[in-house]
Image 1: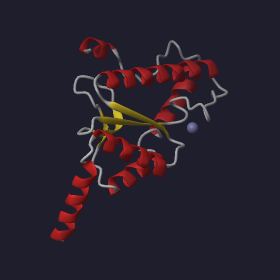
Image 2 (image 1 turned 90 degrees about the vertical axis):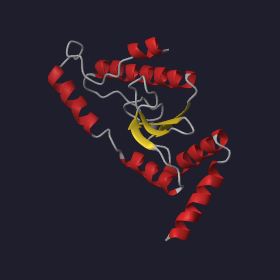
Image 3 (image 1 turned 180 degrees about the vertical axis):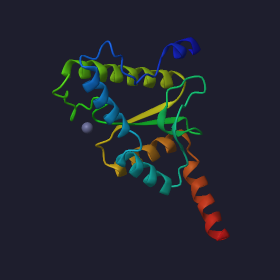
Length: 172
Ligand SMILES: [Zn+2]
């Protein structure tokens, strides 16, 4: 498994030889990438999740021997959450190839989708629960889904959260 993981490269850089018009495509890619992190929907999900008492790490690799990162990692329950942007991860409802350099973009986004699948498979093989959500999904529904998953993997979890919040209230 280590060998397999080592071969997988997380690569969002542009291969200039494959870009039909490097300046156009690369600039567009850079602009899109800059908007990719900490998106509004990601922040909203994190905020709502935090309010429920769930503690998590953001943007970090679930596996110690593999560099692939998940958007939200709940390590005790071994849950990796990916909030997939509709453009970058090829949402079936919203994805459309840009007019310019359409073939190049299609190939690029297809390879992202393949890599997403590989990452999910790898994590599942290692005993993780993978939750992939689209950025267009309502945050409340996403958070409910996450809570349900935690409860199924850690049955005592709700009680321990309730107990710790009671203690905090008592301490104040
Ligand atoms: Zn979408």
